[in-house]
Length: 430
Ligand code: DOR
Image 1 (tube, rainbow, N blue to C red):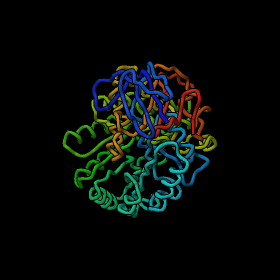
Image 2 (tube, rainbow, N blue to C red):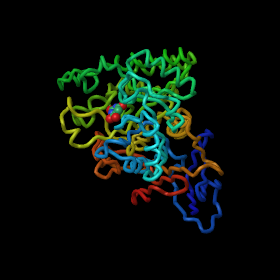
Image 3 (tube, rainbow, N blue to C red):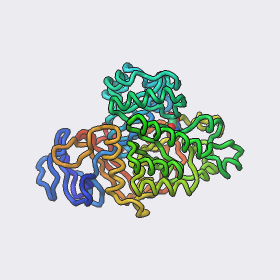
Image 4 (cartoon, rainbow, N blue to C red):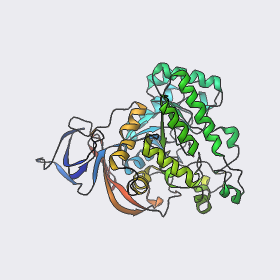
């Protein structure tokens, strides 16, 4: 199969400037990039007015498989990824059973090989059953194919277990990926502690719950030499702690989610539990700090924390509904609307945070846009305006606090290994 992506603006993360060219895909490779390519027999794809980028890499995705097929499966989550322009995902281990044993890693990899339209890299749990008490066998999990260790969804609270985990990760040269929330302070809170939580009668989750664990884990990284990746940063102080740690030479990286750099806790007044997420949506001041962190490089990557739950679960009221909502299919729209069209970040900067930076953090193959590279490619129309309609999502969770939002920017084609897996207007092609 030969496909020629014609006339787009090529964004190669290795170059400061993009350039207009055709991109030829043959088999599973990019074989040529040049203006006006002569490509007899190739199917032409019109990319005029669009950016042609390496396939996007989302290092924070819940595929819910094994265990929660009503929420998502590897197949359905992978389709949501493809529709979002994402060609590689790192999937989180809070499944049932948890990804805490090589057999579960093998299940995820085999199921992905059979049913996924994108590349799937599993993350391994830090503790058995994610109970926080007994470390998993990091070496065995690494040999089975996990790319990082994380207790995602919560923090391990026992410092002795953490010491062992950070030490083992340092020995393996692999990152610890940290969800930073002290559950002693989260307690029964469903949202950021502030005026909205007071009005809604919720106990709230203080910013300190996050800041404490960010500070703690930075110290663990500093003392053990392990690489630490901090997930979904949301508070002004957490951004500052990471900024200072980087300046001291601590091996720490960080990600922000589109919802945390675009929405505030006020959204819960309208959307209630549909906007319940942890860490929670916070204040405008925090949002501004997260954006500043993205702008000055303190925050390296953009990741979705795509966290599907059923409609019924999310209708149980603020206190009882589970935390989390979906994000794969709004990733590009929210990012372009809030970071690119506002002039906060350039397109190459944003694409780096969606491709090379997250890949480097997780030790994944380097996303490249050059002859010889694997043909994982995303075509983004930066000016396509659309209104978020979750009923049209590929994910099984067809609801979002972003419903009705007008966004500008959308992936229009997604290629994985040279195969077109998504086209705007046609949907998933598999
Ligand atoms: O809101 C969230 N939901 N945050 C997480 O970190 C985990 C996720 C989930 O698994 O539902």
